[in-house]
Image (cartoon, rainbow, N blue to C red; front, side, top):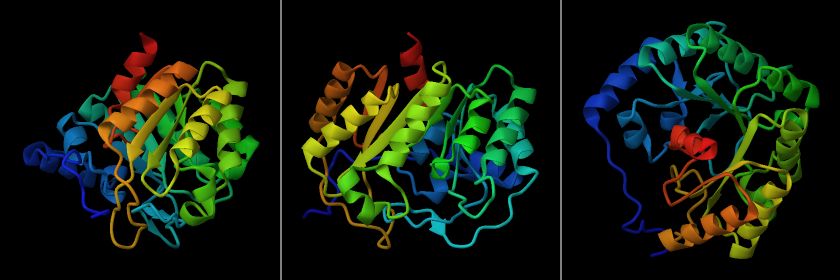
Length: 285
């Protein structure tokens, strides 16, 4: 059957660490993308006491047909959220922090202020931490992007997610060219910031289209790349069209490395922030 998971799609959960970290997250009234997007790596990441913080609430203004995050009318941003993120970063003694958000097209600054405040609060309590931000496209607004770039996070990540042909079906409120331009603009404004992007496969794309996306990302000097298998979060999202085999991911990784990406993670369960600390170490070697 096309939609039956193959044997290489497996993940485990350490319930002891799982429950401990859940308690800490709830104590600070925070959200993590691990829960909201039904990430298959939640057990692995929680075992390492890592998580990707989801700021600006857990309701998105967009409705991408692959994503498990709820959409609708979001709440007003919590002014205490950046401080709570920093407090948990300090409590967990994290070395690499990933901060992402729902898309907030409803806000005048599209949520960049919450990113900035989170970065500043984290650096107050742990100046040595590596900060990676996984951002929405901010509608391509350069003034908003400039505000984030000025904070100099070590990594700015923006996912293209899929091939351009499938955008109307999968990301109807996004634009492939605009996403590439976001990555290009960051690199142009500050070449010392690492740029990162990712895509998922298994939604009906052709291999030639995947290879073209990899080339497009390298053409805008993207430094880091992740490629993973799309897994349907629930019946409300699009079904899986194909499960790629591990050797196919290996081939994508080989192509990306030949093109000059400094760090590549390609495997069925790879996600944008999966093993983010390890991929950065590879880049710095």
